[in-house]
Image (cartoon, one colour):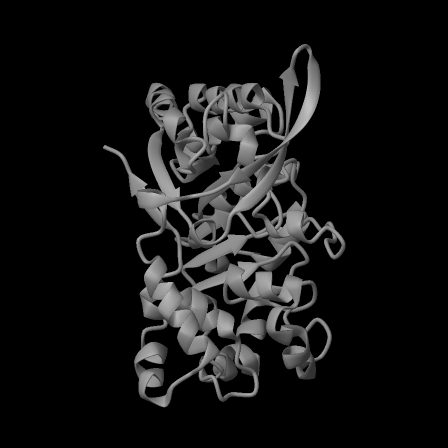
Length: 349
């Protein structure tokens, strides 16, 4: 593969964030978190001309940070769109100034190549319960500034038991801004409960309260049982099931032409394997150590250099087999059964 095969690039331009969502890898692993940020100059080096940019989708999201935390984010979007790239930002919306968001909205209006997904899981009374440390009044101001400048956007709402009652308020607000409205169901939220410590005023004083964040009933991921069955195969891979499961893998890189660039400028086939590397799940660091230090780092290599590394070019697909010495369960768990594990998103009309 080479850059011509790549259709979508997910960019984690920072590992910093203003929030502390209890389900986030950065919140769960503060002892190993390192703050990195990609600069505008880095973007220009990694994507030097239209060959690397034109017609491609750039998703500013990531595993560890919020793109809006990077002060050069708008400059990066402006650079990529100037060469014909399409940019989508995924953000909690609770950082930067109103002017910053107005500038991004104007860029969206002028180019028609910029879209923002505001991940706001609730309304005034509930959003902060999962999106810990965010302030709804700030989010509301920023969304309004972006919309008034002509920016196109989507309000993305994860439905939990505690915020379901505010769903109509959020949907109506999104419509008033001219945004699309969508709900999202994540497999992690259907398998795990989270615990948040929320500050609230009681009898004139601020107190801390522990809140269990759970997802039940119809709010759960519709393919939860498929993942339960898939986990049984991972725990005890049976030969008679193997080929069917391996054939059902839809790889972001191999099948969909996507790459992921982390805030430390290492390149991965997807956000899932970067998450595994960050946490060193399944001893992924040891399994890949034979490739040397910085083997997939774009500080001194091109995207094509990394794509042509033996692990990307050949070993990745072979390692889906559980008997391979570089096998990672993550590839089966998140991408088998035609991506059954991955988020379900429903847009309202």
